Amino acid sequence: MRGEVTTDWLNVTVAGHQAQGLEPEELQKSKCVLGFVPVIYYSALLCVGVPVNILTAVALSRLASRTKKALYYYLLAVTGSDILSQLFIIFVGFLLETAVFHREVPPLLLHSVSAAEFAANHASIWSTVPLTVDRYVALCHPLLHRQISYPARARKIIAAVLALSLASGVPFFWWSDMWRNSHPPTALDTALIWMHVTIIYFLPCSIFLVLNSLIIHRLRVRRLQQCSQEECEPQPVPLRRLGKTTAMLLAITSVFSVLWAPRTVVVIYHLYVSSVHRNWRVHLAYDLSNMLAMLNTAVNFFLYCFVSKPFRMAVRDVLLLRGGALHPQRTLRRQQAPTNASISSLYSGNNKRYQHDCTPLPPRRTSPRM
Image 1 (cartoon, rainbow, N blue to C red):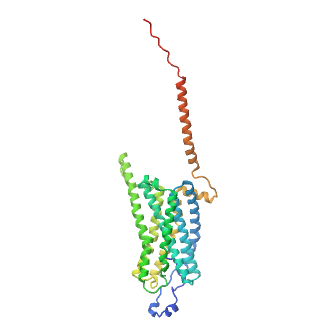
Image 2 (cartoon, one colour; image 1 turned 60 degrees about the vertical axis):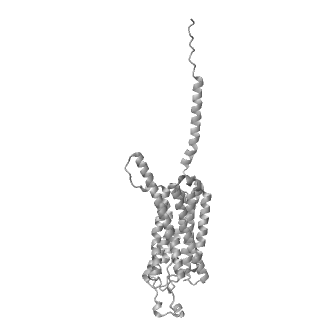
Image 3 (tube, rainbow, N blue to C red; image 1 turned 45 degrees about the vertical axis):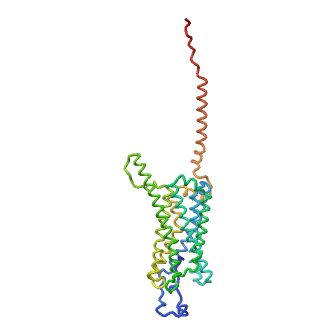
């Protein structure tokens, strides 16, 4: 799935094809019309994305340690997978293998890096699935969520997702290079492409669509119930009533669905209509779609900052090199409230008891003697 574009105008050397005995009409190769634009783009994306994701990971780790919420552990898993995707796909796969070494590396290393790229990419996307399930259970089954959602279980789920993602990257050791393979896709290529688009897009997007629809439906039902009790006119659920966590989840899944849709379409088009190797328009569309898909690894920080105030405060604390408590005034108030309540209740109880003891008894009436 490598998101790189060759800096050479031709994808493969003519001499290599002549050595394989190909005809002249088979030597028609698509050109890379973008030139060095992908190199500049991926370099900038790497220079911005990696520091931003590291900052996100530090802020989320602080929030996770303070709040002990499973939500922040899932977001940490997404951020860590994004960092791995940037290192393997952008830095190793594109900048080193293609832009620096021009793919002149041992085939074993080339295929091994390809498997690692797919594994990191699968982890980056599938780490969002437990987050979606957690939000669905929290909104639709709150009592069950209190029982099953805690940090230890979240860590086990994340470890299972990462292990499955690593295993799912192994078959892509035999992934063929779309830019350089002139032959039509084989049966193995077809199976790997469909496996890729199913794992990377169709299956997670189906889960996101179903669970997010159930979440929105549940919120609408609650809104209608409130309106029926208050005898008001039903209205659509506004964004501010979705809750910060739900709004963050909808933003993450929506951005992923939009950014990865073009690449999925281009890969299927390459498989059945026109090859990337032969058609420069498909080559251009494939390059642009890969650049758009890799943007997904660097946008979550800005989504978190836009939606979540605790995250913005945690980022500010990290940048200012301070480790203050989260919402110190609220914490102090919460700690003082039970104490004040107990003191006031104790005082009121003692005061009532004192008043009862000090109240003079009414004088006894003596009945007249007959």
